Image 1 (cartoon, rainbow, N blue to C red):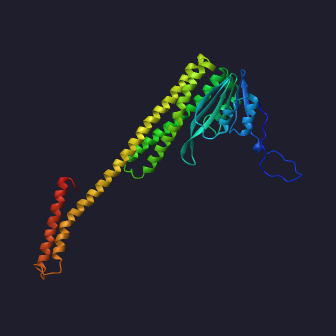
Image 2 (image 1 turned 90 degrees about the vertical axis):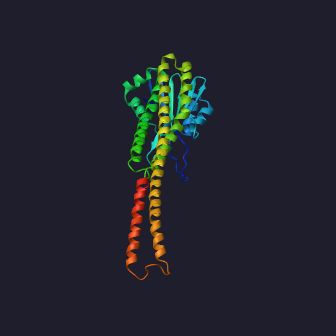
Image 3 (image 1 turned 60 degrees about the vertical axis):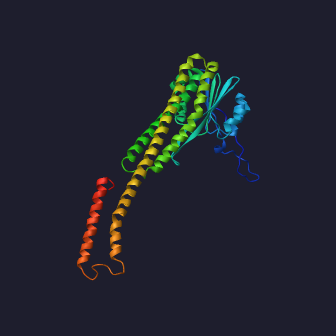
Length: 332
């Protein structure tokens, strides 16, 4: 492994007159490279404008491609230039602080004898792969023996495969939500269903445009990498399509769970309203009887204790009769 000269960036901090300005190590971006079989892999974490200047001097990349490296919110795409290709790909990354998935961008330049990767943030499992290639000569020899096309496939394949554990976690979450709905926790899991639905939407937004990029890469490989890599890039496209199919299935499942949960909540609300309505109807005749005999006028039996017990017994008979009728009709 050899390390390229460090690229200095202008200091932003003030310094006192008469003092010599010293560059800060934190402001010195580095580009590292490993080499085997005549193939070089350059890896730059968090690319900065200083790196694009070095890329322009070292490789003479097109200014539009270099502009895409430092721009924000680039869509996945494949640009074919004379002698090299430029890839912008996105992969899902889970942020624990927010509990959300977002797109992590990876820019890649691929030429006949080099591969340049420029991730804007760590993308699992790219840092681990880079460390293995840098520290283990046998791994480096095996990956670099197939040329730049094979190395590109290995990088993309590992990043794509990292999506499947995320899909498995989403699937387990959906199954848990389904169990919770029918265990009486439908009211508490409304927010969880909404968050899961948002994760699936974000995942789909990342994968949807990338499918077209992989199909375009499958066509461009014949020009740059040869027919021997057909089966590898076909596998990459198939993996992307499998991820999309799983996400389509998850989308239907979460929408069905949301609808089912709303139905369960509505059914329970109807049960409550039915009981309250039945109770109101049952008590209505009793209230009417009590209101009649409680009027501030002369009524039969006034002044004697016996009518009170007859009225009370009649109210009990009416109450029992209405309850029995409602239960027979299934309203209670």
